[in-house]
Length: 562
Image (cartoon, rainbow, N blue to C red; front, side, top):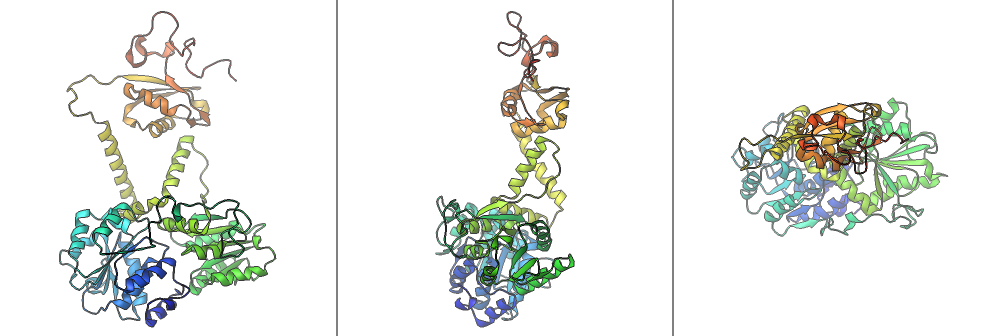
């Protein structure tokens, strides 16, 4: 589809979309709008970046008749902030039909009388305790369904859905469309149409296929992501808040040899104008694609026209391309970034699932670009930072992100983080709790001392050792005793039952730039109380206690080693 005129929408709705700069439907909108316009139930595997609001909002504006003093459509969202943003966006399209959109949140006047009511997950009780009249509801939408399922207790969600009028149209949207959301949607829809059709997330499906290196996909910009025999690379920058700042940073970084121009694809002329004004304030002049006199080229939603203008450029590789927002589908992605210089895209965390699927379908290899990090503090903290970065950028984070976003409507970020740490600590304490039936008054578990082949000269301290030990072995810090860091090695006291687990987990781990060797501390002069590991009697005959074949030296203290 190249225009909303080709879809079953009224001329007023099409005109309202055009007034907002929305002229070309996304793949989800092109397939979902006809289904919803016919009144069918729908399960949409789409999320932020895929055009979900217009996908269900435009046909429902045409099909439903408001003005009855109570909602005809309910949209359940994960949080207050998202409900308010969606209500404001749909309100711009409501003017043509005379309908009213509102959010069941603060700063809205009598929202319960709006035609389209956006309901945060923590206010869902109002939909079945008579705070909101649902008798005239003709359609219900679960927006960002994975986040809603995570935020709403299952019994409350079922009470709400069960109490809806029987003829009510049900629309479930989410990406990823998780098992819990799928189970709920299948139980509360009738012959729902799945969009996109089929299980695209099954093994071997389009989302699982990776681009094949060395294979030419075509010769034109719309036929493949790479035209020079290479697997094309799409650089990803995660940007929350004002994306203009991210564009400014990329312009400063990219506009150097061999790149001479940055071509930015925006969604509308208004967006391009605002971005151009922002860049001008910082000294970056902008103009239409192909203008050799300016460093930044802005394409106001005319992807193909901008790409055609590059044909006049002597060296296309000198032009970097940037999507101000995630491309709505594979064809726009290939049109924008199929050939030329470096390709970049800005995306929010919640859009990563959609972007991953678009990139795979378009034949791009997605590369996440990390921001500049502070100098190394320690190997342990570096590993922890890498793990946190990967988790924060993983597509499967979406339902957790939506849940946290809804919590931030009621608590500060520090309170949410503190609550998460409390739950984590409670879980560890529960794991460490003695099993039921353990003998009362049993003797406390003994301590043993471990030798670690890293010390002060490796620029590590007790905190580094404790962090490495707990992160690598999973043993709680409460089961670690005294940590004695010496010049060339360290001694760590741990519970006897954890010793073997810690030795196995830490051996070979890099800390302070050194590969660790960890074992029981067997040196005679450091064995407390004349007893061996675990308080067992020291061997009295034959070879001295130490490594097999050794002379009582601790591991890693060979004076002949260089």
